[in-house]
Length: 253
Ligand code: C2E
Ligand code: CA
Ligand code: CA
Image (tube, rainbow, N blue to C red):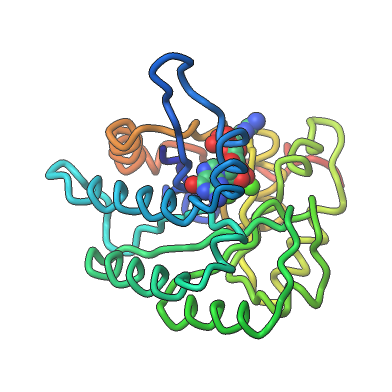
């Protein structure tokens, strides 16, 4: 499934996060929070991620695909996959495939699990960068983030967890998000707000110079066909949708 990522400056869909779905013939959809840990434990997560990216490549080859060059696909990478010996080959192979289509790949690493930054991991991060893949630090604020870790990972973007975005309400806000956005800007890192569900959150985040949005306010994760419909509609209505909000309705902070 594909969930739109929207640029806060242009209000346009610039990318999508790829989210794994498993539809069991008898029990229906199994949540990824259930099957991903199993795939990690059984060391099948690498294979699952490869298959997921192959599906994306197949979707991009559909005749009705209208996604432009430079469109960004974000994929979640588990730490156990990053630690595997064949990870470098995986990264190079898929970077080449996506480059062939003129599309960009971002690897998201969650900070919920701690990665021990050793020589092997640093080498793999280097391979990712050399291959032209961007790095994003996912679920920021919920886990093990510390400044030395961020420096080692040197992410292109950080995704502020929805737990913090949730704290923005019509009559309250959190100074933490604006601190994170300021810190990221000073380090040259882009910021993505996750789990955006309300217009007042969009207004507050825009006021505080967030770079990108993701969340149900824009769209739930969609099948590729539905995602293309959403994208086409976005291209047609981008100048009408989400006009800049007047400053006086923004929240106090
Ligand atoms: P995540 O990477 O943080 O992905 C975002 C999750 O938040 C998705 O849940 C998405 O459907 C949900 N979400 C997006 N916008 C909103 C919103 O506005 N409100 C709320 N309440 N939720 C929102 P999903 O698809 O159930 O995935 C859960 C987690 O499973 C992901 O969290 C990620 O950690 C993991 N996951 C999913 N697909 C993959 C995958 O292919 N590989 C790996 N390693 N992990 C995956
Ligand atoms: Ca993610
Ligand atoms: Ca996340």
